[in-house]
Amino acid sequence: MTARQPIRSAGLCRAAAIVVLAALTIGAPVKALHAKGPTPTPLDQIAISGTPRLLVEKPGGAGYDSAWVIFRTSTRMQVTRQVVTRVRDLTGRSYGDGGQPNCIRSTVIGGAKVVRPGVRYRVEFFVRKGRAGPATRLLATHRLIARRHVVPRGRVSPPRC
Image (cartoon, rainbow, N blue to C red):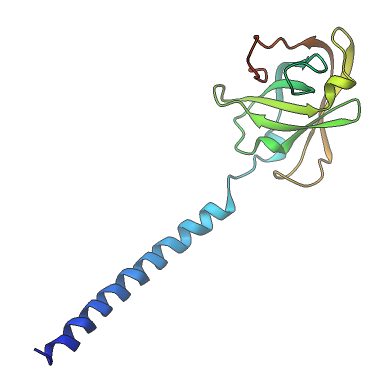
């Protein structure tokens, strides 16, 4: 029995080593794909479709103190942060709207202090190569009238498309 124990444990070690090597071999490319993230849309394929909307919360309202630029793109974007909006020298961070495929909501933090409902503002749309970095290319400029975003009582929710 003692002569077979080393063989049995060596067999188990060999099987465990094969399983570990297989997991590492298969897992390495999968991990590399996850680290890379979604592929940015080429800049020449990004376009604003339709008329964007500029919404603003009442200062001291539901707690956002923000203005929002809601717009649609002509193509579905995997990296929504490629589009950056600017209203009165404040830049917004763009988020995808889960319910609408081409809808993007750009949140301008502090916008409620400088954007007033009923006033027309110039909204600029810039694009960049990826999710971060300088937004160097001007995509479009729209003159939009700010509308008040009314949140139902007791709820805190940003506007939807």
